[in-house]
Amino acid sequence: MEEFEVDFDHNVTALYKFISENQWDAAIKAAKEFPEQARTWVVRYHPETNEVMWRFLPIHSASAKQPPESVINALINAYRRGAQSCDDQGMLPIHYACGNQASIEVIRLLLLANPDGASLRDPNGMLPLHFMAQWGPSDLRALDVVLFANRGAIEIKDNDGFTPLEHAMNGEYDGSESVAHALENYMNEASQQDSRNGHGMVSLPGANDAVTRLQQAAAAQEKARKEYIMQQSASTRDERDDNISMPIVNNTFSYQFENNQQAGVPTSVGKFDTFDDTHFMSTQTNEDAKKIVDELKREVDKLRSEAEAAEQEAEKNVDEERRKMQKAVDDMKTHLATCESETKASLHELTEKEQMAKIVDSRLEDKENELKNAMNRNDSLRKELEAVKREIAGYKSKTSKLDNHLSTLSRTMTGMMKDQEQIMKASMKHEQYMKKIALERQQKMQDLIDQEVNFARNSLEKQKNNELGSEEMINEALEKQKRLMDAVQSVLSERRVVS
Image 1 (cartoon, rainbow, N blue to C red):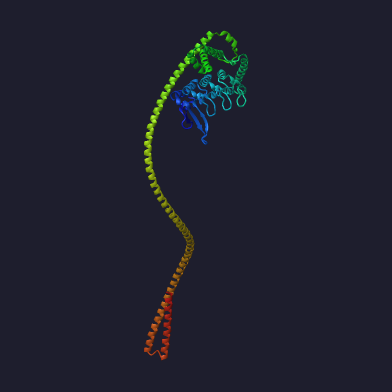
Image 2: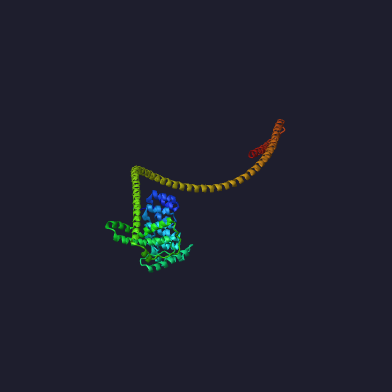
């Protein structure tokens, strides 16, 4: 039957998720509706190195979580080989169950599905019994179940050289002393029984009467089978061969254990009397053996009918799964056709987008060239701007100097204005003074003119009256008049200069 594999972090199955969350009812339902998930390995990878961190089937994880019997039963019905499969650590589900105090019913189911599981060592050489002794059983009766499946496990040493008894003696769990005591009693009883009989049938120390009867039935079955083979015909020998092909010890164990559980036989661990082969042989007859054989034949027929029913159920499940797979294939084909159509459309669209991308790339290249040119112009403008800034800085420096000069000139002009004002005042005073002098001079000149006029008038009158005298007197008068005119001319010249 094909197995599958999923990634725990990306597409974990619903069944495994339910088991991880202890949702047992949902897990049972998922195992029945989707049996393929029971044979799907769940792998977790390291997030950095991508190495496998662990790889489990759902039954491995369930066995380590103290599950109900119904969960393990559903997982075994969905995928029986899961109980026989080792994980990436080389461990079976029975190893996890025994190391995590699973119930006696769970351990029984796992051993029925894989009778050899009790004899398989993990990479450290540990059997399921080692795990149970090291970590403790859920019930001391679980020791009987594991030891019945592999009676020699009590003396097996792991890679570190420890037997189950030594693991129990070193255990730190509650009840470790009881486990060690039970295992020690079993070893003692086993050695004593081996010395009394040679066929290896031993009693389990502390076991109950049901286990004792189970051992007796197994011995009787073996003896009766040999006698029956000698007496029956070839036709019945084929049927007998079918019976031989069954895991006899484990079938008897399953039958007796279930009957004892249904009958309510007490199963507490305690000391019990060992079985004596000589007593058995003395009380058994061929008739009893035939009865046992008949009973075993009925049991075989019952098992065959159950197997046929299971096979029919399996075929039904296979047919149902085949229909589901066919439907899934048809859906996948439809989906594939749709995907192909979408892919073609996507390719066409991708081609158009590639062409558009080329155009965009071309435009982008042009824009990049324009951008480069703009950046070059920008660099030139930046240089020009820096030069202008330097010039502005120079102008600012000059302006500052001019401001200083203007301030100085302003102060100088203010002083000059004050001086000019004083000069104007002085000039006005001087002008007024000169006007006054000019008026006085005009007045004097007027007086002189008036005097000259009077003098001339008087001279004329004297001349007329012969009062002037000689020519010398006339010249003297003219000379005097000339001096007077020069004085007047000098006064007039000074007035022009002042104006």
